[in-house]
Every structure is written in structure tokens, then in C-alpha cells.
Image (cartoon, rainbow, N blue to C red; front, side, top):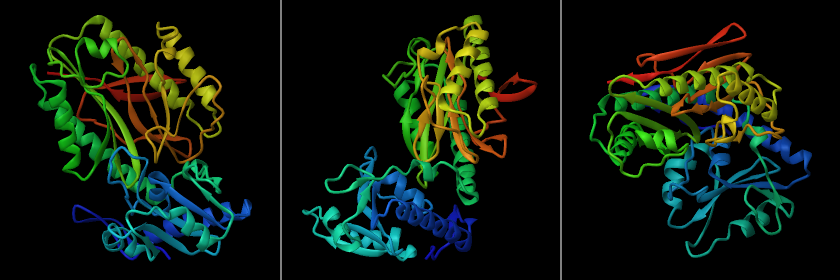
Length: 382
């Protein structure tokens, strides 16, 4: 089935229709095998991350930005047929701009009736799973299918990471004392949106609020000396995370010590992010690394990050976490201490770590683990 168009970004070819189609067809085959193993007649996808995954990022159904679902659903039947289910008012645009190139069949009903579940059962048969709780349907937990990224997904992820990093670094250089946290937030949003990237998390803060709060959402404080741009962003269903800092004047010793600790913990987490490692093992890596860096127990003050991909965090490292790292998986670790923090989005591929949100034109800090050096962002001194 595939897709009948190339993926173009700013007039440049990112994926050919042939490469994109190969990804989409492979995912449909994977989902069909998942259904066969469970003796299902179909699977109904309503969550945006699963629809984005299945369609190779070609379909975005969100209208209400913070919603986990959108204005349509996707049904894949066990015989391989694919449908999109939506309302009469949404159908023209979805047909033209979202599903048309994919060749999915439309199932349309009035805007005042949500007939999604009923029509899915009529089309596919009685044994249908759904990724949101739905009476009469089994649960579809598809994260394991999304965990390992394919080559074309990695190409999209690289573009998103580089573009988000460029936007963030550009805004960081414009900061000056007196700017409010709200304006910092607005500048980041503008820099992303003009690139066709949707911001999904804003944690912009200034001065003592950065040190005092692990999740310092903007509350309007005006910048004096220390600024943080901390954000997540989405495109094609994929998500990246990044944090960058600027400081006016000499960096206080305690803040410098916090950054040194965060960078050491970040290096340890990246070094131990290897296929087969569990979330609990990685939590213990952070726990030990904080203690070694002079901040024992710091891991208890905030989550340390974890796997990413089609969700800002697919899972985070916890003391009893059973999730396992897979090859070709993306991660966003975010260790922090005393106002210092290290956060980037990285890809594990064949035992090697690739930073997708690198900003080499900004100051960098380095730390080694078992003789292997890892780089993290430092503080831009303005």
C-alpha cells in the first residue's frame, strides 16, 4: 500500500516515496502479525502516537493540541485493509491532506455521532482491540512495536533534533536581563512553530526558580542573571527534549558544581544505555552516580528521564522498572543538581550513542565513564 508522495521539508527531499512506503508497509505487516498472535479481527487506533507510528508520521489528527486523540481514528483489519474513521466536517481535509496519499478507505459519520467503535466492529468483526479503553474491545498496548526505530524514522528524528536544537540555541542568544519567563516561552514557541514544529512542553525559568523547582513552569519572573530554556517538541509524531542555559556574569561555585554533577550522571546514564538494560538498572546507575558526584539521594527529587520516541517519555527509570532498552531506541535523560542540568535527546544504535539535539556552537562540558567521554551542553555566558 505505502504512500504516494515524497516527504519534502522546506523544499528539500527528506524521504522518497519508495523509502517512506517501505517503512509504512513494514509497520502494517508488524501490526498484522501482532493481531494474528492475539487472534484479533482488527485493531482500532485512536491515540495520536500510534497513528503517527503506523503512518510513518504522515498523519497528524490533533486539533486540540494537548489531546491524546484527534479528529479521526484508524482501523486495520486482519485481512490487511486500512480505514480512517471520522466525521463529515473533518472528512474533506483528512481525505485531501492526511489519508489520501496512503490509500486508506474512509468511514464517515455525522459530526454529532461518534460511531467509531460500532463501525469498527461492523467492518472488522467482533474481536477488535483498541488503544484507548473501549467497551467490548480488548486493550492494545503498542509501545513495544514503537520502541525500536527504523532507518527512515531515524532520518526524521535527526531532522527534528537538529532543527529544535538550532531554534533553542538561537533564542538563547537573544536573552537579556529584564525579559520575562513568558516572553522566553513565546520566543521558543515562535522559533519552533515557524519551522513547522509543535512545542509540547514549556519549562522556562529564571534565577532562583531554576534552583528551587525541578519543574519550573513559566510564571512571569523577569530574568536577572540565570535563564533556562527547557522544552519538548514534536513533528511527525516524534518528540525531542532539550535544555539550555544562559548566565550573565560569573557562574556561582555551587551552580558550577551542580552542572559538573549533572554532566557526570548524564555520562553514566548514556554509557549504560545499552540493549537489554532495565529501567531499574539505569535508576541505580543514576543513584550511584549522584552519590559519587557529591549529591547522594538527588535521584529521588525528580525523575531522571528515559526512553522517548512517539511520546515525550515512553518510560522513565524507576527503582522497580522492568522496561528494557532496545537497539535503535531514542532516550532523553535529564539529570540535575543544584540548578545545573544536562538534557538532550540521543539515539542508541548498535552500541553507540548519537546526540540528536547537539549544539556544538554553544559551550560544552565533558565527562567520562569507563574511559569513554560524553559531551553535554554547558552554560552560555552573556
